[in-house]
Image (cartoon, rainbow, N blue to C red; front, side):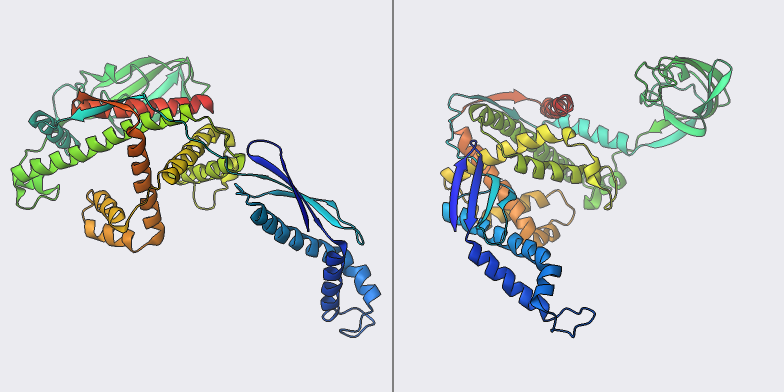
Length: 447
């Protein structure tokens, strides 16, 4: 076997492989003899078909089968001998494939890029410092009260935040339009779930009132036949209900798993959860700054095959997220929606892998278990979660990757100039939300 490797780009290799004709012809001949033992043709007994007939009937298919097997086997042998590290599957073409001639084929493949990490020395990284105060805990308890409020019917006029149950029908001029009516619809004023201006005009109504509401559909409204149009809704109010917040008593506290309804323990649990949430937001903010700096300092070529693999994975996640079903063909989702984010993920993954490798970072079983226990704290039965993860090699591998990634980020942080910035709990969560929205907007623009 003769092998030559041509470097066509930083991450692409073109391998030309030649296999002596005798090897192919002998393998084809042997395969045809085996085939002849089992075939049946009219006029011949089983195993008695002349080889000339067997070759005429099956020679082409058998040769293609043998050549396919040989190309795959010799490709693997070649990349092993040449020390190549393929990223994804090759594209293989036979350039000479004739009986009596040496088989020649070309395998075009992508390889993992050779990375010489550039330092992020001098990068400025802001690390939020958050203290959970009693006022923060009070605000969280108030939020929990609102989330668990009951609706209490009232004779008073509806105000912002009240729930109005109503029938409505929409008209363009004197003609009702499709999809513009409902009965017994419960609408919370101020929720902005209706057309702009609709909810505000319901403030002040009482049960039994009838009213006409005039609105203008936004120019970018999803239903094109309504976009920018003026409409009138005839409304009948059945009832108005106001929120009744629960008292912070034993029964309320026990809803959140605090046995006995002890308020001090309840506040301690809330603080623990808020602390964990803020620490996650801080870690994510610091990590994102580090990874942005790492990518900026290391512009590397990214194998298209790895990007496609990541794109396919993101498509499957999107299909699951939107409940499209296991049978949904994810190829229907355009690659363009995911390609840029997929490329960024692959670039980061390659760079972090090099950080881990070059620094000899490892994750011990104790470190993996500690990470699992940290993740399990947010569940009601944490020990069950720990047992599940530690007893499942696939889940353990995922956690191991997370531990190694954290270690890599910490190692990179040693090169950066880290400054602490005091922030409130609300500020750090708002900043995390803003960062997430910014990333989503950037991905949408790129798509």
